[in-house]
Image (cartoon, rainbow, N blue to C red):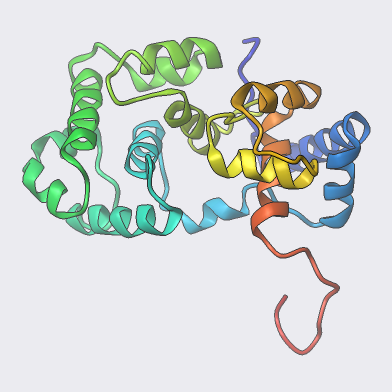
Length: 231
């Protein structure tokens, strides 16, 4: 289906990454420099630090992380996992749990209400995870942002984490806006519209471009291999 992208299988992923890097390298000189500086960069390596997530789990992760630092989000996520035997809850499991226990784990009542609302829609058939996962990005966005407490940033993150969509950018993410400011040497933090305008040249690989920008802003550059210790 047009508009739906997924990287499937290791060999397909290698081919896709090569193609996407080449495209971005030619499309944007700023990204070309970032790509050249990171020859072994794996755009999904950061996800190894997260628990396995289906679409509901990724939306839960994103809702928990609204207005919070990455460190705070991961602390709360760990408490939620502990509450459910070491894994993120399914919609049915979350609905069966005492909301007060979720509050004790560090979630606000507003976020608990959002996640229970979403879980209820998935359980009673108003929403279906398989159907949602097959929708183009814009249709999936429309379905999910109809739920109070779920906005574009929340859905965009889930598109990347759970569905591995290839052409997602998060213009409302302050960290990304700061990463763009740094990479493009702007004298101000760009607005959401400015980020979207810059990102036009990255289509249809905006997810990968975003990963490079985050890496450049928040991770040390790659160094030559050192034989005496891991790099």
